[in-house]
Image (cartoon, rainbow, N blue to C red; front, side, top):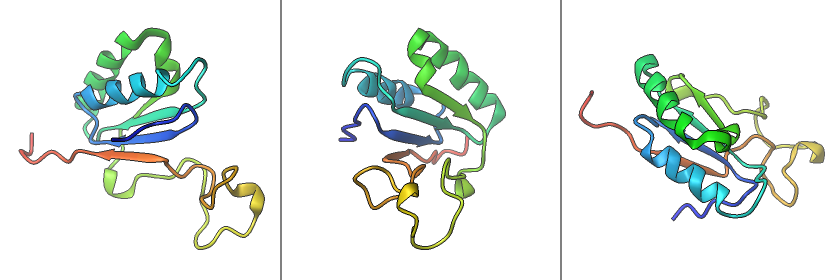
Length: 116
């Protein structure tokens, strides 16, 4: 359903325990050699983020395209765009896109419902 491309920037909020993160990484890497894309996996809980790091360590060299963060999902920062409103500088746009550099191409947000 996500259909990630090798150049995509994917964000996985509420990522722990990591099954969707590892599936996203595998999909990103299966699209061809030397992907430029990155998966940002976030969990608000430091303990759960630590578990996520341990699980993703099993990806070996593929983890070079992975970033694990621990930040509240309600206000997760954009990695490349700090401005507001319409982008007027063409240099800030992704090539062939109307979206600024740093805007995520795909977002996974599987919000926990049990409160654990």
